[in-house]
Length: 147
Length: 483
Image 1 (cartoon, helix red, strand yellow):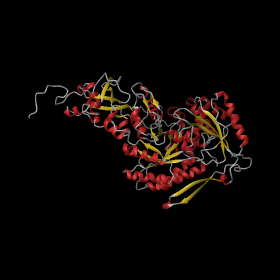
Image 2 (cartoon, one colour; image 1 turned 45 degrees about the vertical axis):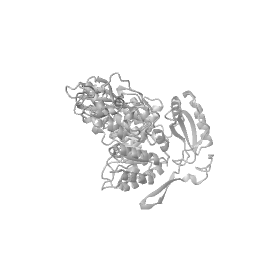
Image 3 (cartoon, chains in turn red, green; image 1 turned 120 degrees about the vertical axis):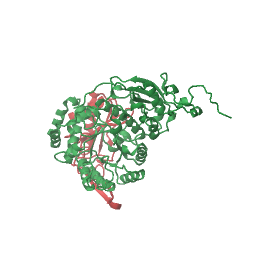
Image 4 (cartoon, chains in turn orange, purple; image 1 turned 45 degrees about the horizontal axis):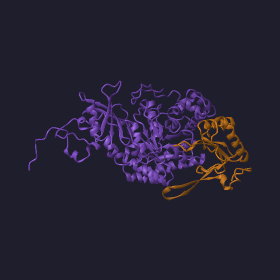
């Protein structure tokens, strides 16, 4: 399966050039850019690991700084999900303006839907990531270093 | 002791006096920051003076009755009287006048849209001296805004709950609206969500009919939601319509939606302001998103000379607190002049909405950080219009393709995929700096090369437009309809 979180998961994987264009756009909006990674892509896991602190105050032509962060994160965590996050700090927003996946494990086993029968055919559902049977850092094949 | 009958004629003489002379018109009045201000389009009966007509509207929507009453003198009556302070002819609309009226904030119960509307649109719309009356806009003072909590969640919180940022959300209303059994209904929900939509939706008139009772619909729909979530790794939702005959039934249905794990419920505008505000409280308490379908609004919002503009309904709904509200598509099958629609979207989404007659906005409106409402565009839209939809409606919107998903020649899932690929490709192109509005068709054709579902959608709906003149337009400019 293919996890389709993020703004561009239904398109072919973005090239580095395309990623940089999105970063330039985000910087032109005055947003802060950061890189996060995880080996627990459960849709309710909203605390991916931060790859350093967000980059504040970059100009659009400094997109290479964020590309450098992203490449370093990829190198350290090639079998993790990695996303670029653009944060909009303006009053009334103060939340993410754009986020998209820039790296995936080579194999995505996906989720099992667990269910428990409750009263009157009501079901209790929970999503179980096949990869999360292993401890964090040992998921999605060798070479992962997630905390 | 006998009462004196020798009273000189004055403001307090028994009988009928012109409203303007009773203090309901005052061209020198300077509205206070705490006043509620209204802009009314007034069409007086032939021979009725427009100033007297405006004063009558002010009177009948505040303290007046048809004749002088001495009991006014037991009150600080000037404080409670609404005051028409401006009356202007409307250019190009003979016989119509725009009247601005100020109401002291003391006239209204805190946090009650029911009370506000009972005053402002209570008796006065049936007043015989007027041919027609339309409430065009309202300025809600911050002091009154702060007596409401607004949307249970709002755009920011909703996006965080869903973990979806930087693009319009996508939905579809399950079709046919009526007649599907619960299991078949769940099939449509599953296919559409698995194919790539974020939401599916009950239609406004699907409540609990003999062919499908609400509880069965909720069970089969939530199965589709969870299966699609497992296949995508995304948060998905189905708007479960809890509209019912009474509050007890609505609460029961909402509780069950919560129990089965839905992230969102919906209500219809037909339930009324008090019921909507009760469901808003419930949604805030229970952490579910609240979707509002504006069923019935066209009966009083559409005609230019009589009724209540939707921009006012939108304000009331933001105050009483819904997270989603249908607000027009511009390009789809339902009424929607581009400038007027822009005024609705601004009213729902901005924190400060500046007066802009071109968009039908008559007053500055400050929302004092009240959360924003996510507008929903629904009705006759399809993937081939994605560049126009993004251009007119922006990013914070739910685009709902009902027929445009379910009517896809390759199936429901394919229809959903076509819409998702189209929106992602358009956002990507816009962010890359392309002139996406002009180049939209090329951007879609290019994306369709890697996506047969989108190619099929573009093919089947390529000539579909709804090109009719709009009824509800601002008078400021004549605007062409959108092809």
